[in-house]
Length: 152
Image (tube, rainbow, N blue to C red; front, top):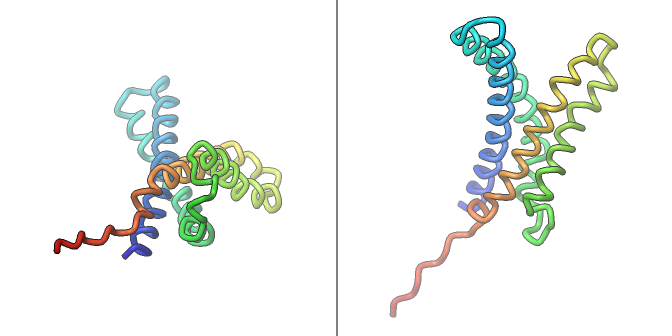
């Protein structure tokens, strides 16, 4: 049960990062549209853009979870200083940004480098929130079940 609980904790952490990224872009798109159009249009555009960013961000978040995050979450020793949210958040943000920036810089054509402006901050936000959430919820998801007290 403890292994499943830990895996679920890692999924919760990545989902929190994904929701932060998607929500941030929904608000940004709605605010940018609000100056030009009415509130209903701004909400529609914000939700539509959030859906698009959510799909893209979700693909990267799931792949990163599967390839790296779940393994770190399961096997990082409890004594590691990375379990402090003050350390985990910046490290997660840097790693998230690097996971997206390095392939974009290596493989994107010149006209595709503009996507760095959107995807690198999104990945940094996702990684930072996911790592902070993992650190903050570690005691709950890593706690082993307490044995029943012997009454006798």
